[in-house]
Length: 238
Image 1 (tube, rainbow, N blue to C red):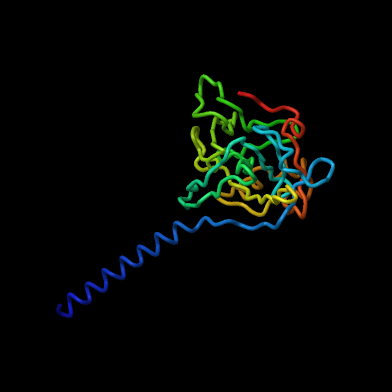
Image 2: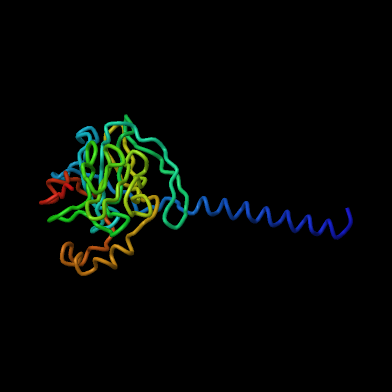
């Protein structure tokens, strides 16, 4: 091999290495974000027992901020690890459900399309048991999270992957830990495409009226879990 061929070979090798490293960096960009450990409690302020959750029932709590709602679900079936991608093309691996049956999951309740979310007065987004009956937007499966504002459908058993509608990415996952001895649940962080900045920008005035000056304040040590029907006066069923 002469000098010219050697230099060209080194250049090509360096380019291939850079491409490989670039691809690996791209695949690892969406990492879990820690917002502190927050114990989930019931409406009486006692630590919530995971075994007390009713299967396929909407529960809601707030994390990581006082104004950002989260769905907590016992799917009644195991939820396996799923490979997903954000709208910014960042790949991540959702770890699956927790608990004895790996059926407990949590997701940000902010729709990934128009940022629709449950309020105390109204909720256009919720988990729906079985198939959603809607002639305009047929259900893409059973037991999905459905947003009636834009008919985006997410599969909570697969990391809230988008199955239908205009949403461009899965719902942001909220990571929870289950303590098998105490049967308690603790929120620890998020994984996937966060939309909190867009959410606060869009609803700044509305949130200040709903939550007050603490809307952007991080939840400190505890967050109360309620059934959605007890938290929200009117859950829209489309």
